[in-house]
Amino acid sequence: MNILTLQPYLLALADDQMILSHRNSEWIGHAPILEEDIALANMAQDELGHATLFYNLYCALTGDDPDALVFLREADAFRHVQMVEYPCGDWAFTMLRQYLFDAAEMTLLARLTESAYTPLAETAVKMRNEELYHYRHTSAWLKRLGLGTEESHRRTQTALDTLWPLAQQLFVPLPGEEELVQAGVIPSSAQWKAAWLDVVRPFLTTCSLTIPADDTPPATNRAAHSEHLAPLLADLQKVARLEPNAEW
Amino acid sequence: MPNGERGMMDEKTIWAALADVVDPEIPVVSLVEMGIVREVLVGETAVTVTITPTFSGCPALHVMKQDIITRLQALGCPTVIVETTLHPPWSSDWISNEGRRKLKAFGLAPPQRHGGNVVVTFFDPVPCPYCDSLNTTVKNEFGPTLCRAIHYCNDCQQPFEQFKPL
Image 1: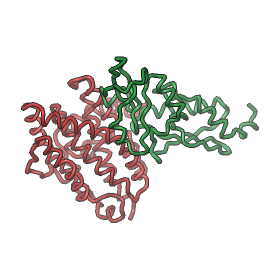
Image 2: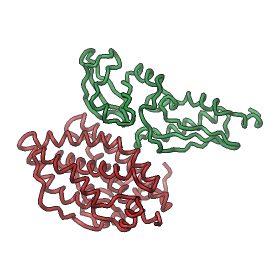
Image 3: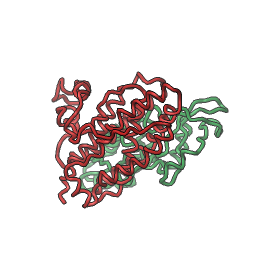
Image 4: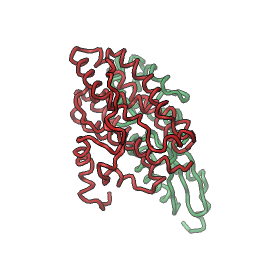
């Protein structure tokens, strides 16, 4: 197997983390209480760190510059799932999105620690314990919201109705998957999805939430984005694009 | 220093100099006490220092690299290379006993040792660094930096931070 086959996979992992990090950072100064402002800023920074590690792995294969990838790439060249580019919405949407993503990340990292590609396995080992802190935080919030008041439950269920199909895009196989799975580099998407469902289904049920019947992903191609990406990138890339050759 | 002497720099001297380089976010402990410096290699033309990040999003890493270069150049090493490794991943268990003592004196509760399974610490009370009471409450699992959590001591009524186990 040619390890260059891993490129689309690494870029997808990196972009998911990067865009979610940016969205969470939008809560800074706006969260309902100071403690949560700090917690979200921390989680955003952790995801930014994870994005950096995945971009480094990607760039080691392609020779690209990670900063240029993030700050100067056009919208249609990003390969994250639409779930992470949606606006923050309300607190329930933000916490549920982070929870679904954390559960996906946790179950994936557990498998990637066994990757036959050593740099990827080492990166997964590095991230895994950090992710535990996120999962503990967001799952506690989901319980409070799901089992809290009538309003918190209604808002969380509404968020789940929107996010459940969006989250399924995480598990759409990427080009080269079969080859990579056979070589022991990555787990199959089907296996990953099954592990994720084993975590989130019973948990969401204990939070008194109903899993929607619709699990059709919004797109099967990660080049397809929603109308929410362009304004996000306009904000994220604004300063870098003012002076692309600036030295920082 | 005459050129001839530069090649005689031994690892022990380098490690001793690195003991002066402090963590930019916790300026009372050194990078060596934190377990961040993993390896020192003295080559014919360069000294290579390998460090490992605590949390992967730690923004202090760039400052640490520059501080190491500055310190070793002051010692007389003309070429200093700082490399980063992720493997094995940094563990808060690697913070030395002296490092833990300094963290506590700084008002930062040291991380509980966990032997690789960080989850075991999730159920531990965190002793207050000021009065050693175990009658403490978690206020926030996240803090002013990635590596800190915020607690409150119900006995001495003092808020305090903890270096998070990782």
